[in-house]
Length: 321
Length: 168
Image (cartoon, rainbow over all chains, first blue to last red; front, top):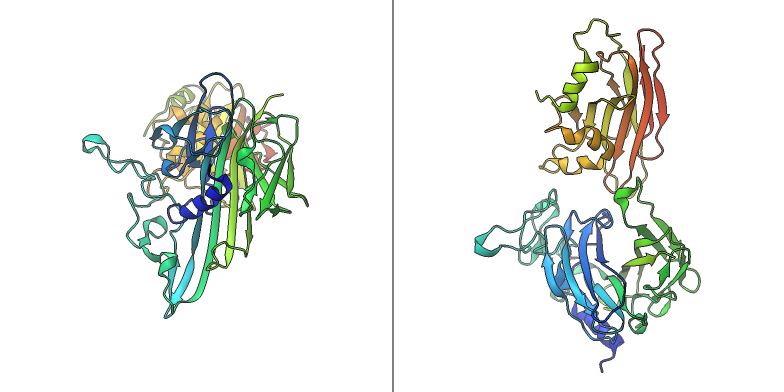
């Protein structure tokens, strides 16, 4: 059997060039939303919505591109997305929970971005975060039907970005961008940041298992003490975070309950990890929550980069007592 | 001009533009859009409307929204002004000309109170909803009368600052 930790690390690297997740300062949040996190029965399925939007969990902006999504079975092997569909505002798919235990579903990747100068001219490395090609829907439906409408206000062109570059903000002129391997020897002012992103959900058939929660010792990792599929209102959850296997101290978690439409305010709150890297979260009641945290340091895996940014995001369900 | 159902109802009962018994108040409304220290700020959508105290009739006075949101109508978010949308917005085919304007930067804004309100008890309502922010409704009960007219004031807690109605 493959070593799950090893294959995870390799998978992250393999994804480096293929993945570009939106992670701007904007509050456009990427989320996955399962129909249930705790399932029983002989033949359970979970259905997942996935989108990028301001308010949780209302898809009104972009669907998440399902090519980025991976399903990991409780034994660490890769599972399958069934019945995938990408709509105008959200993508949706099913997962057939054929194994007992806790499944992980989500996106993750490492991307290197930055800039350098050649003869005083600045060039960029990596693709600017933003909706990936095809985020506006399929390029063309059957019978020559037109593709998805560009989302309101984004102003970005449909289809893939121009070769070797990407569109400027609001569909402006393309800025030249190259891959990290194409940085010429005479480049100066090289500033590269390795960006780690992870956004996931956990769903459990039967009894929660911890196989997929074993830390790999690489990057920012969620190593919870309270199982993410064993959260109950009124019971504080203890979530531990590690950076390269060591406690991530003083990490701030932003926690946002779903259902914003039925409130006046977002009602988000924060929790901070202690010396052991453990954040204690006092849920505001039963329901779905989205949380995110990020860290930055100067320990990139790829030594061509000088900086590393890491973010971890998950959607969890807190059950009523 | 588009006559909305609400305007039509109002016109028949309270609007009374031709009624000589109208007190002809030259009142004004002051609405404060607060300055907020947030990572991502967008100007709020704001609706200002007046309702008869018994809720039987309503009339939109002003709606501040992004009519040209990066080249497209920003009407998608009008329903986020949920109280106004229920009482007024959804009954309008479009917001009548002269009753809307662009979103406003933080600051204090004065809007004239219609001069043709008949004597009676009203509630002035101001609702704000902000992208990536919150939503708030502030209500100010007022009384229109030839004698003993009463303005009022209320303080928003987040999305709105001070809201007041001044009557002569």
